[in-house]
Image 1: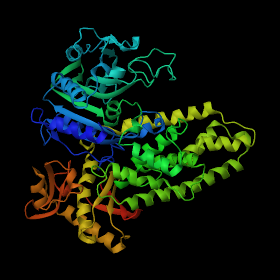
Image 2: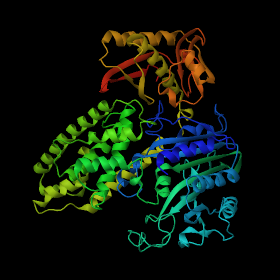
Image 3: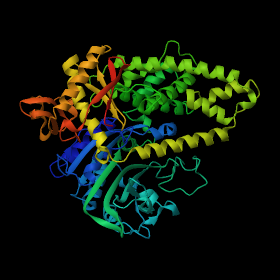
Image 4: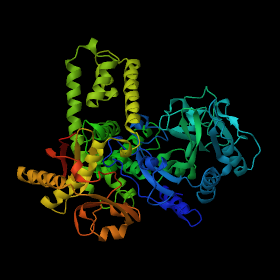
Length: 623
């Protein structure tokens, strides 16, 4: 099955009458009005408040396919399985069904719907520790599904094809936002998980383990030799940490995540995820442009990097992001510049008439029915072309810095600083130094690189704390202000204005919107005055849950409206939600109860961020 077929089949499977899940729309890759995380990196991210007990408007059985982006994996891309952008198939039980339903359902889906051979499937479960018992319930369920009485075996002892179930400690088979149980604070929820792996080399004819960097280590299904690939993980949130230890939750949740690309690769019996329909057309277009063959192993790492990075970059740009040196824009810039380095290597620097932007139509074609409907392909290409020109200048700047630096000062740290500051590739630094008879200290470069990577990972982990519901009154005030701002902009500039993205910190609100011209000082002052008038009027903010069609007919605005569920939450700012309101939008909240608590606001700046997209900054006087 293709990735597209698997996505559709999965949603159909869980929304069928006997499983009765409600499909929820995927969240944007750049979370709306949420300062707690840079990107949407998993399907459960938008569901944290509901997994913690808040009722969901669509019920307690949910499903979706969530596009996700993991910035910390940028430097891992190049092998057969790592990607920064991926789709996560998800289903959730919010205090409804549990292990007895979840594990058989996923097993049935991948074996009977997708058609994977059960003989090539293996699973892992939580081994238990001195505070929490082994997950024997999952073990017993898997034994019945595999029709085996063989006991579970500790995974670290190696792989045995006659053993279907392996146990690992909390570093592998436990989930909480804080990691392993000992790191969890009092009040945190968590639980064991069960992962499913596919064996790409059941007869050991491909000798994947023997060819890997791990050939001198015992092969087990959680190793990274390439033989086994995780395709799905069922998390069972069943415990809460208390002062007395771990206690069962009164309502236990299921959070399942399955890698769409990986399941598709397993379906096609090819461990290279870049050969599936959601990636290979980009590779084929790249072959056409560069005249390089993907069948040549020497070209594969570069072509995989370009295909993944361009897929992610195209969707991020379509959602309003532009390259920059800060926050999300920094990672978009890294995607594009790393792609350009690899592109130049494939082109042998003959890039005068070719551009990375020529790959955009291939990405748009893949996702034209899902995440890239009715996008402006030319505008996306313009952003990429502009960044390609900027990077050419950075390369020239880096070369001048090398030429002006004493050879004795050019060490591994110097090479990393060039890479970090200008995106200057280590390979090019090495080529310039060869002429001087020098080599780069790669150990120092790697040490600096790892230090940066660790900081990046810990930073992105710290950013994800569960969404706006866990944050301050100031953040909630800014969130409500985005509704006032959008309504005021539409009244002053016209109904063509629509939100393209936003970012909130404790210090300011940043709002991106569609508009082709720079706003005049008079327009900015009118918008600011209008917002402050509505705040001074202390208008009530009302929340209502209703059918989407009814909400739209009532005047509520919604962009990407086809992505909203059939039942939506509407926030209305005004004296009467039916007849006297200033703002009415589909939104997930949270908001202040009335505008008066926000206090006066000030528009600090307005600027262009891309073709037809403007950015405006707003601060609260009381912040």
